[in-house]
Each structure stands twice: as C-alpha cells, then as structure tokens.
Amino acid sequence: MGDHARDLGRELARTAVFAALIVVLGMVTVPIPGGVPLTAQTLGVMLAGAVLGPRLAPLSVLLVLVLAAIGLPVLAGGRGGLGVFVGPTAGYLLGWVIGVVIIGLIVRSGRMRWWRVALGVTVGGILVVYLCGVPVTALVLGLDLGPTALASLVFLPGDLLKAAAATAMVLALRRAYPRAFDMRPTPAPAPVRAV
Image (cartoon, rainbow, N blue to C red; front, side):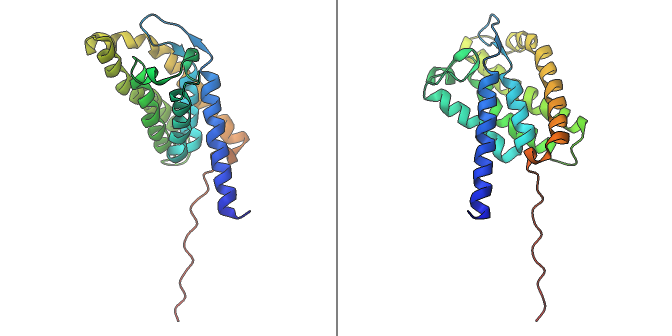
C-alpha cells in the first residue's frame, strides 16, 4: 500500500473514531425544559475540533449528521431523522460544523498551549455554537431572540465545564499519544539545483 493510501486510511479511521465518540457522548444527556437537552455530545465535538483540526473535524461531525439524517438515533437522547434539522436544535447542529473548524484553527495556530486549547474550545465549542443555535431556536419556537438567548445561559456552566474537561483531555492526550494529532509539518520542497 502506498503512502497516500495509508495516510487516507489513517485519516478515515481518525474521522470515524471521533464520529463514534460524538455519538457515544450523546447518550449522556440530562433533559431540560425548552427543547434543548444538556448533553455530553458537545464535549465530543470540542475534542474532535482540537484533535482532528480544521480539515478532518468537520468531516467527523458531518458523518454524525448524515447518520442522523438517515434516521439513526445518534443525537442526544437517541434522536435522529430529518426532523432534527428543522427543530429547535437545528442551529446548534450547524454550529458544530462551523465550531470545529474554529476550534481547529485556534488550537493549531501555534504551539499547543493550555490557553490556546481553552480559547479554541470556548470560542468554537461554545460561542460559535450558541451564535448559530440560539437564533434558530428562537425562530422555530416563535420566541424573541433576547429571552431565548437569556434562557440559553442555563447551559453555560455545563458548557464551561465541558470546555475545561476538553482542554485537560486534549493536553493529556497530546502528552501521552502525540500521533493522535497528526500534526506533521508539510515537507519543504526539494531545492532546485542550478544546471
């Protein structure tokens, strides 16, 4: 098998592993009145963004969303089907896709430091997801944006705890198994010899 095929196989495996992690963490859920459950699924999204980076993480999230679209119960609380894409949580699902790109870009913008990981998972995993999710929730439920945004703050302490947990887990994984991040530098082009 050539290097390209081996690299592609490794990327597909890493993408699938994080999609599975997102699904498994979705089984850890606490129902909250208002239609949006408190779930550990967003912890999986944060981890995917930080570990896989801005190129592979969205593929991992999109794989979960495709599985949901065909009716598999892969979202928090065992939800699935096309209805989730027009319900009150639809904006949050879109936020996952955008959020993992932002997480990956921030985390990989320099040397991996705790504050960079924390910033990435907070901005991409919380702020971006809320910015996408809250307006859609307000629209679908026919509520004003202000009260909907205020009501969403009930999730903020849990999301901040997930961001802290994601930061600790990413840093521990980086120390224990750096290959998980596959942050190989792009090889420099070969020097051209003058003839």
